Image (cartoon, rainbow, N blue to C red; front, side, top):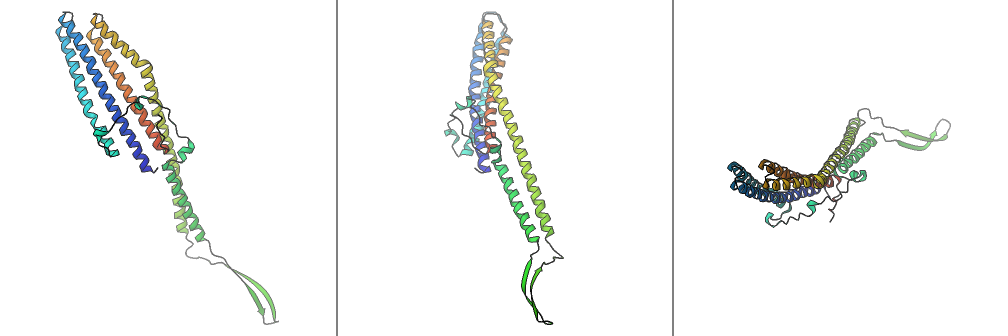
Length: 294
């Protein structure tokens, strides 16, 4: 694949990942509305029973209204990733089917090794320029060498009528121009090409290291959120909501637990998106176009 094709493939993967994440964000916003409605009903029941002042119901209604506004904003923002994906693929955004099962998975990623990196497009282009500069330098150097002319023949001496075999060697002396300027220019171009190659290798290695770091961090975040943080946040919200109905917790405790829960779920979406974008970036850098498992 060419560099342009690799970049396009990465942009399509980025847009697809963002579109799936946007759809997941809509579902999360819907869940937030559902839970806010449950809390609002609980608060209203407490107010009607005289166990809470009216202001608490007002707060619950405000929280529900904020959840509904967040849902509207999230749904509007989800339009742009679909439009971008449509423009990149030539598919009508309304007809794009977003399969999201892969988005939830952390499939193994084939990381580029040194051999793969040497095949990467940027490095290959720089190596081609080095080879061209080397050929130009050698050509200029050869053209600057004088041509040797060898001659041979029989020479007769008239004094004594003897003959002798004579060999001659002529070397032109280029007094004014031995192409030194062209050689120096070719040598400078070769040095510059070699420097560009070294810089390309360094940029590629740094970019791969950065993408691998982001990938590992995203994977660790997803693992921690799923294994520890989110289960505890969900449990805390359940106990806070149930305890509020029993008069053991205040409404502020419920709000705090709800906010913590949805912040954790939002962080999970962000971490999953970062994982898949880092994966796409590694695929572009390696120039290998690794296929997604499954």
